[in-house]
Length: 350
Ligand SMILES: Nc1nc2c(ncn2[C@@H]2O[C@H](COP(=O)(O)OP(=O)(O)O)[C@@H](O)[C@H]2O)c(=O)[nH]1
Ligand SMILES: [Mg+2]
Image (cartoon, rainbow, N blue to C red; front, side, top):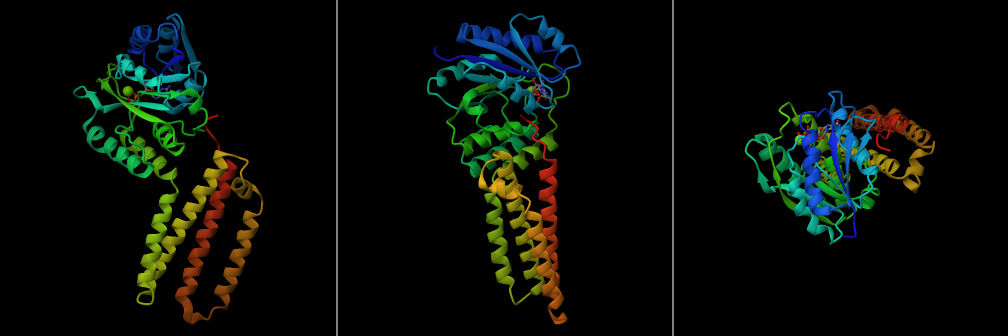
């Protein structure tokens, strides 16, 4: 065995299950990886005594994560791991570490990400709430499959193995649950080698409420799926443009509406692309462009010119004047949005 493994367990107030989870990891790793592994627990400020329990177990690396959130815990955990591959799973005993024997044989093929698929494997009764099983997870999975061309069957799975060197190049940003989607999306964007294994999934043994809140986390997943693919906005723009052309000359109101929608989408697209560039890397021409100080003056000049046109246009073109005014305000809002975000942008993950 040429490679080393880190087994990473994220933990937030899991005093009921954390000890069992660690021993489960230990027993299975001993069998599979002999002495070529480490166990890492990323704790996110547990206040229920989990930490004291973990400290009593010998040979566990504890990472105290300063930022809240499932994504932050895993991110810090991975960054502080030593293994060539990092495999992670919940502390609530829902993903038995006996699943590791499915992951091991694939490592020789040098994959970048292996996802444990509950859908391909077995799901214990009541382990996954009905809505998550038949609504949320399938829809998000399908979207990722279609939009990112990634052959995934279970985008919300919490047991995965990632190559550490690959992870370090992903420039991950999300600290919450949507980190899990981001990991898949960026693997697809970077054309990483993606594989799946069937895993067993059990009802968690902690007996209290999960940290996951269905609707808000679902929305955050959906948001990252859309936001990481600004090209979606181009499809929308084309649709609005065609609609506005169809309505042209027959219905001024409808034409204006579609032109406005087109403009909104265009500026959303520009905002996403610009901000994406600014966040991803500081040294490319686009991020230089938006980080220089000319954006505001150029746009103000543009607004001045359009304002003049509105002023000079005779009043019988009232509709056109109003349309121009609306477009002006979109541009104005856009610039302020960009400038505000630029000033306040806090990249939460280091
Ligand atoms: N460190 C840390 N761990 C978290 C946080 N939220 C969840 N976890 C851990 O991440 C794992 C997944 O959380 P869980 O509530 O089981 O989510 P679910 O399985 O998606 O319902 C568990 O081991 C939690 O202890 C957090 O904010 N910080
Ligand atoms: Mg869980």
